[in-house]
Length: 128
Image (cartoon, rainbow, N blue to C red; front, side, top):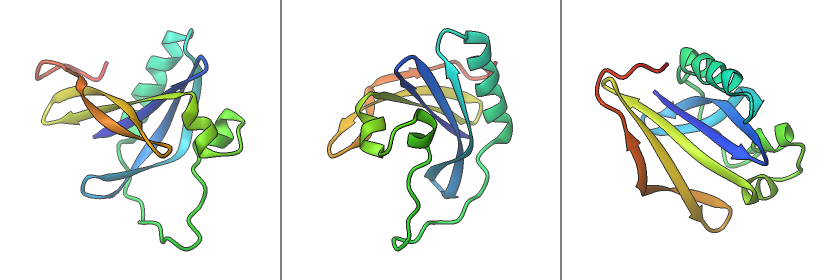
């Protein structure tokens, strides 16, 4: 199970993360947008998103590639505008072990996993 979330301007964006094929994911709807100050709602959004899992989604063709879904939830016009002020995080669960993974900027307009910013929880830790 893999989940992505983004912190941007005091809001947490938690999209459903669809699995295109083994190891490749893309953000799909539904997307939860919660004020960071509402920790109970943030927890609920994570729980609901984990419950949905990683639904299988089709690969997108390069021609007619739809725009990213997160900018519309942030009320901005482009991915670059969204990304400029966003801090992305990944939550990866494999064989009962959870990892929270930080990302660092990777120009142009993207991110890369930051291997120095990974928090690994002991095996058996619950999603709660």
